[in-house]
Length: 169
Image (cartoon, rainbow, N blue to C red):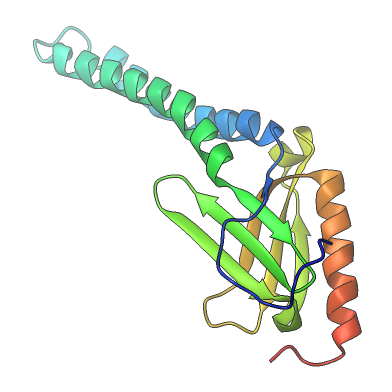
C-alpha cells in the first residue's frame, strides 16, 4: 500500500484496470449486438417482399452502425475512466462511461471483501471486487482487474479489515 498522510479525500484513483478489460467489454457488448441484429435479420427475412421492407432494412442498417460505434467507443472510454487504488487509509474506485461514479471508503469502514469471476471474465483472466462498507451508499465495485491483482487486493483488504477488530460501523 502507498504511504500517505491519514487524510481521506475524494479524488481520482491512481491505477487503471487491466488492458484486457477492453477486449472483455467489447466481446460482452458484441454478444448483445449479435442478438439484436440477428432478431432484426429474422424479421427482415420473415417480412418477405412487402413494400415496407425498406423500413426493416433501414432499422437493421442503423443497428449495425450504432453497434459498430458502440463497440469501438465504449470499451476504450470505459478503460480510460475505470480506476482503482488502495492506500493505507482508503479504497478508491471510479467507474462508468456515460454516467461516471467516483467512490471512496475508509478502510476502517470495510465489512466484507468479495471477488467474482464470470465465465467470460475467466476467459480474459479478469476479476471484479466488491468492497462492502458500513455505508448507506452501498458497496464499492472495481471491475476489470487482472485476476492475480484482484487476489492480492482481496487478501490485502481482508487482512486490514481483520486487524481493525471492530464491526466497521
